[in-house]
Image 1 (cartoon, helix red, strand yellow):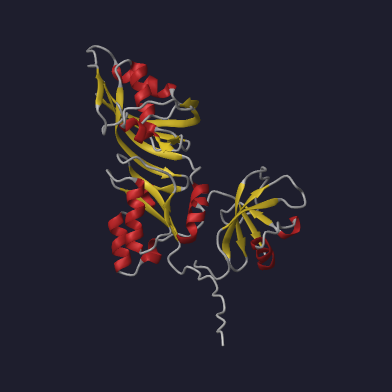
Image 2 (image 1 turned 180 degrees about the vertical axis):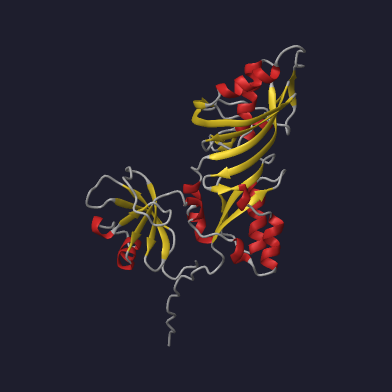
Length: 330
């Protein structure tokens, strides 16, 4: 007699889920940090929200569990950096990890501080930036830095960026230190290199500290050592933020549990089923432009999906991503 084995239901991952704000140490790649977090938490479901150069330190949001489904949307956040560049020397990587390609002493009697401050003022605003050869961005399926290490130089497409502000400038020649607020995808070392070219003496970045990524600030960050200690002491819940932590500046769509269940099945909610709030204390939101990313919350299940507003008056939002199903870890 044949034995019939009933199919097993897909096991729901009960591992940790949420966002860790790591203070990345200098010399580590973003992937190094992810690998370390995986070992500490004993889980494979870990990812970061955007590459930070090995030279860089500071805010590196790391998503764990269900929060990895949010990582791609969080990469669009603006960034704030504290930067130091050195005038008079250019390198092939545009930072201090590279090989010196040119050196130009700062001519005595020239007001280099005034010239540097003016050059910094001039780079504020909308512009097109060409990625450096030593970059993780891929061309023809391969990271640029791999081509650069073989001595290759390939054409790169310029990309639009915006530098919103440069402030807190300090000059101690040949070093110039400043704080920069910019859009995602901005290569800060390229900004330093471009300023060096503008001044005619070359420059390269010697220090980079990410102070903020969207709503996340350096004050929220913990070290990898802090994380390991928290796990050993069973205090992970104290430092693991909720899955929507990186999107707290996005509007909120609130729905009933009945509507949440229908949305999980792919059914867009009717206008009568949704309530928009600003996400800051539950105040009713004002006019929200079409194509705005929103967080979606059910009455009981909390944050469970991402949706995008649309101009359809009957169905004002469309579902972008289901983050959690009923019964999944919080």
